[in-house]
Structures are given as C-alpha cells and as structure tokens.
Image (cartoon, rainbow, N blue to C red; front, side):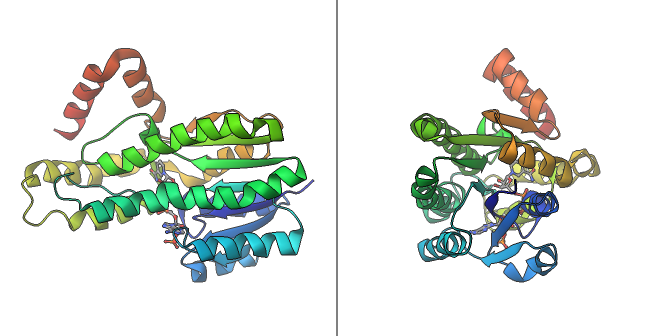
Length: 272
Ligand code: NAP
C-alpha cells in the first residue's frame, strides 16, 4: 500500500531522485525545497512540490499541516535537506557555523517534532535522516559540516530509542561521495573564506583535490542512492544505518579498525 511521505531537499541531487522513484513506486510524495520552481517536472509524476526553507518554523508548520489536512496522515519523513560548510575554523564566523546547524540539525529536528504527534496517533511512522560518511569520519576544513553530521548521528540514535515504543523507526543514511550539487554549493561557500586566509596553501590543495577529474569521476550517481532511500523508507524491518556510495565503506573501515592515526595519514596522502 502506498505511504504518505515528505522529503526535504528534493529540488536536486539525492532528494530529487528519491522523490521520483517513490512516486513511481506508487507512494504519495510531498517534496520540499526553497527552489520549488525547480520541481515542476516532479509535479507531472504526481509529486506535490512544497516551497519551504527548513530553517523557517512557519514553513515547516505549513508543510506538515498541508499534508495532514490533505491526506489525514504522514507515514514517513525523509530529512534530506542539507549542505556542507567548509573552510578554516579560524575564518568561519560563528553566525555561519550556526546556520550550518540550523539547516543540517535544528531545521530537521523541528520538522521531526512536528510529525511525531501524528505518527504516535497513527501508531506507526518512520523518520529517515540523511547523515553522511562525514558523520563517522572527518576531512580537512570540514569542521562545521562534520560536527553537524556527527551531532545528527547521536541525535538520531537517541530518538530511535525514544520512539520505538510507539512503533516509529529512525533510520540513518550515510552516503559517500555522490554526484550532486553538493560539491558546487560547498565550493561556492568556501570561496568566501579564501581571500586573506592564513590557510590558503591548504585550501589550494583541498580545491585541487576536490576539482580533480578523478574525484569527480569517483562519485556515485544519485539514482543509486535513491534506491537506498526507498529501501530505508519502505522496508518492513529497516536497518538502523545504510552506508552507500564511493569511498564511504573504506574510509569508515579505516578509521574504525586502524584508528585515527592511520586515518589521518590517509587524509594527508589524499589532500597533501
Ligand atoms: P544537493 O544536490 O545540493 O541537494 C541539497 C538539497 O537540500 C537541495 O534540494 C536544496 O534545495 C536543499 N536545501 C538546502 N538548504 C535548504 C534549506 N535551508 N531549506 C530547504 N531545503 C534546503 O546535495 P545532495 O548531495 O543531494 O545533498 C542531500 C543530503 O545529502 C545533504 O544533507 C548532504 O549533507 C548529504 N550528503 C551528500 C553527500 C554528497 O557527496 N553529495 C555525501 C554525504 C551526505 P534548495 O536549495 O532548493 O532549498
């Protein structure tokens, strides 16, 4: 039977591919993003585009009300909106850092709090949170991004225990390197901290690594991840975590089993 779902970050990348696949599988899909104009073609598949910024409480409230009024329920929330704030900690203002958390953690948390009462009343529900391999490992200049995804991992684990008695499952997706607009957004924001930074040598190496053809070609296609999202959203007994995409398994494996010293040596070899 088709489920009623809200997926955020659906105007591009993994969210967009997932919304398309869910609609094709017969689910009722509400797709959120700030650039709702980019989701016109999704509407042709029966997806309902919802203009929303997850950092705006009123947008989140309007989106949940819209769904519950129209469908009488909400079965799955896929919290996928997010971006990567990269740059030297010394140069990134706390205001920018807080915004990273507003999008990657607090916006998501607000939406989750809004849907939980409905899921409890229904006696079932599922929250799927897009974390990252970055919720388990780290990269140069990614302090605030990794902090937000590490926080999301811990937050989601605690939530899973709390909501289990109400038959509400909490699932984490840990994508690796995926070909989406993520890199462009990251690169665009990183430029802001370049001028006048004491860290330009490291930033140059970081940019060279990120923009090398080998890095681009290593990325996994987002439709591969879409299949993982659909599994996470619909499986009878979902796993707690789904790891998928280029470099995710090896990097997580190295840090976990060989320790931080060996993992950092790998980073130094990769980023110079
Ligand atoms: P993407 O193509 O840049 O998509 C990001 C989506 O998030 C867009 O639809 C964007 O839509 C939305 N978004 C950003 N800020 C928002 C806000 N304030 N309110 C509402 N929507 C917002 O990148 P992606 O790779 O598919 O990213 C999806 C998720 O995967 C993110 O959480 C990211 O951290 C995670 N991830 C990505 C990778 C990767 O290699 N690509 C790896 C690990 C994890 P609008 O701009 O239209 O609002």
